[in-house]
Image (cartoon, rainbow, N blue to C red):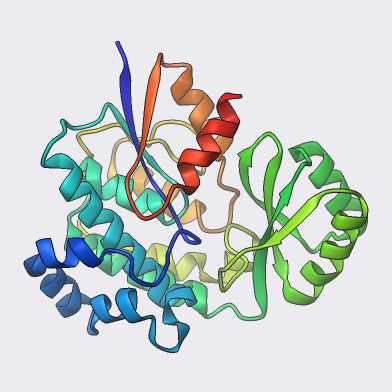
Length: 281
């Protein structure tokens, strides 16, 4: 049996104009989002005033809503998937789609997450293409100990997080070594030690939110395993994801071990679809 795997993209997939047709199709949902967030999220997605789409305090609610609307559209003609996963911010869409929390709670959670992450300044992320995890880890250990591995996307695509000045120096080093270095359009060193100061604040917030066991299995970025049952397990994995690497490669391999998989990307762009192709090679 072919297993259906729905996956939601994270930050970096946003673009000006995303969700335009969906906003017209689901106006009541957009009104609800505006009320919860306290601003016009449709305007930010369609017009990107002051480049807000690339500021994580706006990126996260915007992408969460557009991913959510894409999923509502998907369900009009498709059955519920067998498994769900999401990359970083996309994991919160996966949890919402599983039934762990509703749209309103999800928007509140990602808005808080975005605001907290935005408070960490002068940091960013970059993708290294052509080096495996061990190579990148060794280079960082010996040359840039203040930079962390943030995402393990494929066997040869690793994302790093750190201070801007350190990333600038690392760019020259990795390129001289023959690897491709790509700065990411994000506004912080996500999934690294630099997010640790906001962990307790995020945990305190989501512990006040109504959470429950979902109806569809969700794969955790933090463990590359199924999300545990119970509120305590939900909170633990959502919190630890902030300052721990996203184990995307391991998550996909876990699902592929379950049987023949059809991976369906729900959201703007095809970033994850292209990553899956590389993993399957």
